[in-house]
Length: 167
Image (cartoon, rainbow, N blue to C red; front, side, top):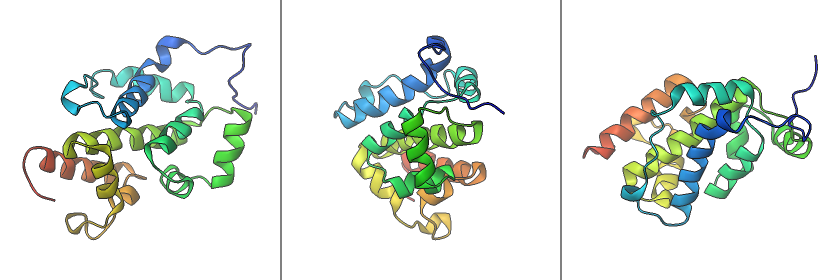
């Protein structure tokens, strides 16, 4: 089995990674203090392109982008389901992420963006994601994002918050 690596000899198609880039550009705008109302990104807009990008293999640079958002290496490792050593190795070798790793990475980025939209600020969203929540059975939203059912529950609670409910 050959290692999937991003190399200068094998450039990635720019169109395949555009939905991924949109998510990270939106997170960057949030870190820069751009109002949520000014942001035009909607992750639902290009779901097929996003799925295609994940299957093609995200670069480990996406982990660096999430670190800039404020996640620690242990938090990333726990959500993505890999060791910190694996994260470091893949970043050093520029090895593309597997489908499961890419899916969890993108899920974390999307939920982070959705939480920031619901709370109106990235720092508030990060606090909420890290804090145990009664509505989530005492679990931290960040811990639930590692699975699709957990993510669906977190998104439902965020929707309630965004539309005026309390959670």
